[in-house]
Image 1 (cartoon, rainbow, N blue to C red):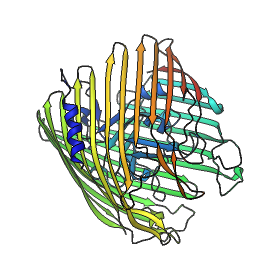
Image 2: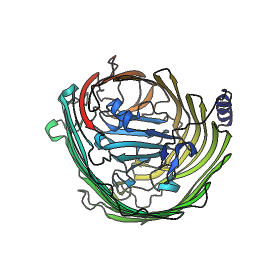
Image 3: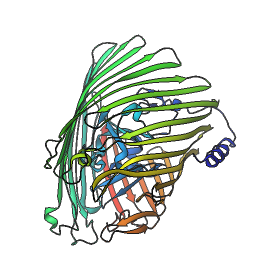
Length: 590
């Protein structure tokens, strides 16, 4: 860790004068340690995006919600339905674990989740945990964890929303809840289509549109005061047209995907003990690659006293890629995992400790740990030091892809050290994180196929400052990320070194509006047509949204993205998203 940066940063934060009470919203988060915790008691840097923020910003895809989140960067290869990559704290896009209601999703062949296929209409809230959480969640959580919680409606609640906008985009979202005090079920349907625009600058001009359709059924049954069941089924289907420099026939360049998710869970509360068992599965199918996952999980928590709790559990994961067109030498594998954690929340000291062992069939066995120690300088100020380990198991493509795979590959592994400060100053709040991550045995493809030859070194600082002035709520974010190849010293491509953001929200009576400014510094890239290094220009995007609530049920909203038509290029040779207009009308009883 760069000690001078850490000391100077935390000293600057502590030099601010303090005034009464720490955050009193009592927001609960579960993704940090796999148990319910007050967000003020978490030692790592976490971000929560709630439904109110989602509706206010009216994002066209999941990654649009990630703008101005310090430490989280993203790129798009064209429009909203095209491929997108998410980089948390400079890590690779495939070193991010994505969960939906606790269920692991994504491709075991490509190694990541196609986040552009996740329907925003299904999302109730998002929890983002920055930094490695392998000791809690296992493989892939090197950069961090994004957990998505789907919507839940009660009897008599319903919602219908229509929206239209640029590039002939049309969207219909509908949801309804029914049941009684013990049994409730939510049914959600969404359909979205767009003509899109020409994606690849060097290809024959055409429109690369997309269409997505999603349906979800979610429910729960309260069997008694101490036991309950829950279930979820979600199906997402769609197609996206894209351009390819290797295939000029645009009509043939279409990706069809078919993703499914299901879960059945049972929770029992017995005194100080909480037990949870779940059976879940997912299917990820696109571009000739298909992954089916099945998982059995058992979690427990023992609240020993008001300050100390023990938790842990077992995970059994089964990956099957037999449905892929590629003929792999091995098509199935099991992963068996066990973890144990302890959490202490005192008036002055806080401690998080976790250890986990993952045994991945035909690959390796890995033990990882997380250790965090926090100190409350006062009820309003918390400083924590966290150490975390992460790993990523090789994908089936890495291991067995014909002529390129290497069945002798090892895990990618990481170590992270992080210093976090969280402080409350009256109506304002500051979060500051300084961190360093080293990742070894990165898998890279060369003339001899896949090899563990990569090394990444990342250091950075994240800052979020929120405050209010009258009816106006302000948020200022900033980060500086130095992500480089440990072997060559070159900056890792497509990660911006500096980003600054500002958001202003105003709500009064029936009228509200927001302003979002996003400044992204220069980022390195590679022109793969010539295999030469290029540098993409910095940009500043300005987004604006205005809403009017006619009554308790009816609301209209206008959003303008990239108001000044900056049209930033995020990936070399791919045309950017230009200024957009979206108008929506919703009728709801909630």
